[in-house]
Image (cartoon, rainbow over all chains, first blue to last red; front, side, top):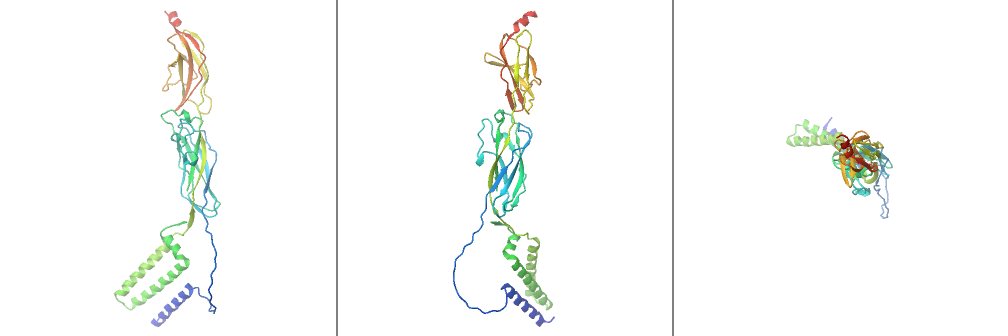
Length: 158
Length: 190
């Protein structure tokens, strides 16, 4: 291929690129004018996760005894995808405050396992489910205050 | 909104149509390099070829290694739940008959419920003084529901039985008062 032909090829390619980049189309004539107007667009917004749980399964907790399992669900109440990258479960009152309702018993008497859940994007109006286990620690002090106690769990998703 | 950093972000910024133009641009540069190489050009051509090579390599690397761009909303939420703690039931019906001489035979009904005690500690009380009975203690509890308490002093006693399960305890109500005449026993054996 000669030099002239290569030049021609390059020029043609550049012209094609310019036409494509510029949204090329058929030639036409038109009047020009100016004007203004208003409009609006709204962007979406995130919606809080909705966390629900089921009644625990397994034998009631006892010092050093077997675990109870609590199933939970994290729902995306929004219409767009939302990312779930963290989920924690603690023994705490609503709002995440320290549990002090039962004399002689506290969160220190229990151990919460690592929640089992699949992290990542949750599509709009979809949900993911998981489980978490709770055990009662057998401490070297009297734990009689914990007998029969309902242990509050606080779920936090983000 | 958040997006991934690195290659995917760059890809996102470029957009698909721009990537197509970049490919064309790289192709044109390669043709230009080949052309000048055949003419035996000097150092400028070598440097240009080097830049072109780097450019093509970077674009290729982005195309190969770049993951799809994606975006999502960030959110949070909370919820509540609960777990249930069991309990240790106390033994019941502690019985201690009046006794004249010899150990006092005690019986009781075992703790109910799902938590089974590992043993029982028996105590004898008189006038506000509480003492271990049946030789039991937390370390050596009675593992049955009966025992015989050897009393060394005459008196009126009440017995109580405490169930033991790890860090849990559960005490029965005291038995009815029982009169024990331990001295009579010693007299009989003299």
